[in-house]
Length: 407
Image (spheres, rainbow, N blue to C red):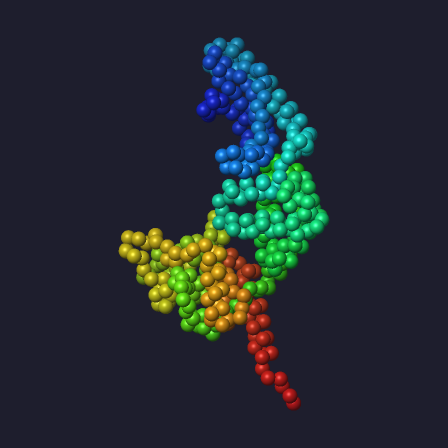
């Protein structure tokens, strides 16, 4: 059966069906009843100045080569059909040979010496096109890399412009050390993961030849709980504290997280449709694992106090209303820290501390680890075990707080 032609607006169509082909074989339909065969080459991205946006943007680098070979658009005779078959076979052979030449001369084709890519512009362009929810961390990773270049005498000559080939393993190693000096534990690793994401993208889209991050990792003890935990007494202290111009939605949402263990990214998206009022249940999909984990769905039992905190939609037909209309994470964090300070709690509290506090406090009250894992939406017990270690630490602190025993 003949291949269906997907004719594009410029009167061309692709013959190559393999998405990995480079170059791709295509044909342009001519007005004289023939089709002119061509090869489309793809060399990745290069940065060009956009007058409209007044900045450097990434533009695909392509080239088209017409082979001066022609097919009959609608062959009528056996001879024309045979000519089409032989011409197409020749064109496919040429395409294969050109592809082999690209592979053999990969550096010359993929990263031309005269190409002047600024990786900083490339990184910013990547952020501008990014649509996922971790964009805030991606922006911080970019700023950290710029700070690193500015703060490191060996590399500050690259603070305004650095070519991909100038990012070496030694530089990346120094960057990971810098990240760990600025952010502790999981924070440094998380920022490095975003940096590696951009490097990987640059390689896949032919802006870089080699991965300078290969073999360089930031190791963190996943079983150690690094964030502060609010005790039940401190939670009550916080609830009892009010201050002028406080945001009631931030207050309600954080208290809700302390009693249900949700992340900021999940609580801000909750709607009244997630609440089963008759069975007193909260049902939602975790943003962090949605689409790539069988445990992304979480069901949490609710008591009357939590249901009162949630409230009800403005009208019965508006169940898609957001329960906690929250400003940006930065605004929420700023308000939270002001609130904690007013409550007289001398701890470095972030929004995620609510999730950790929830887990530690229900474990302290006798919940078993499987129950806690289920409530937190963990796919296994590995990530939940760090809370049991936190419990052991709290027990040790309690023993150490006793007066010294003198016999």
